[in-house]
Amino acid sequence: MAHGSLRNRSGIAAAGRLILRRLGSALLTLLLVSLVVFTISALLPGDAAEETLGQSATPEAVAALRHQMGLDQPAHLRYVRWLGGMIKGDPGQSLVANMPVGQVIAGRLPNSLTLAGLTAAVAIPLALAIGILSALYRDTGLDRALNLMTLGMVAVPEFLVATIAVLVFSVTLRWLPSITVVREGIGWAEMLRGYAMPVMTLACVTVAQMARMTRAAVIDQLSRPYVEMALLKGLSPSRVVLVHVLPNAVAPIVNAMALSLSYLLGGAVIVETIFNYPGIASLMVNAVTSRDMPLLQACAMIFCVAYLLLMLAADVCAILANPRLRGQ
Image: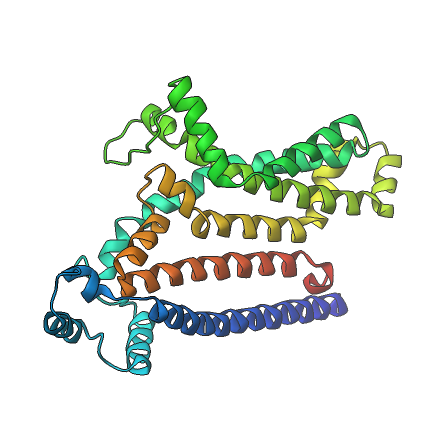
């Protein structure tokens, strides 16, 4: 009894050390990414002063506005000031909107989270179902058909899926609106109609990635001896998969889900642009166009933080799902 308790405590301690190591790596990655983001944004041609005043502005007026915006300071001083503000939760002032960046992002972030949440709610169950069915009936006609479907979904870019969806469901059939309208007090029916095509477009790629990873993980576990033992005991294949196989295959599946969900926040630029969706991705595109560097840098860091948090959560799930670390 004492030996089992000691083993449990050592397993928990090992898991804690691994999680802390992952957290440290994530913080270091975030620091390096902040430097890369700031450097790349600083290398973009032009600046907010030139974009604001236009081509007809005199050099003196541009220089005065650049001084007012603080764009004439050395790059390393601007980076240290910006990084210090980000650490304190103050990403600075939007050079174009002339208001705090936090307020600008606060009006768009809930929209991006809503789109990502709806897509995840559709994509995750569908991907799990496709992956499990494909694994259970591997090397059959159903497996080949599902593999062909997922390969096609991965191969077709999202801008083509979005364009075809608009042509079919909006222009030809006139079932769905071509522009997603987001406003307060919108009804559920109108909301579902507005979100249908963006969610469908984003789900195509994410479902395919998660389904293929789920299939590979489940097939790997189905070849293990404990599965044969469970089947010999009379358990149905579906019960074996749901109760025994999936918990042991959780690590690669969760990693695939984390990668796909991070894509929903950072890779939705094309989808938000085509459907005129007011999210963070389209806001970042506008920031690039207007050379609003504080807004651009803040949006890029949000995407990076979301990605690192999702990958950290996937690592934690994989660590806790490892029997050697659970001490059982």
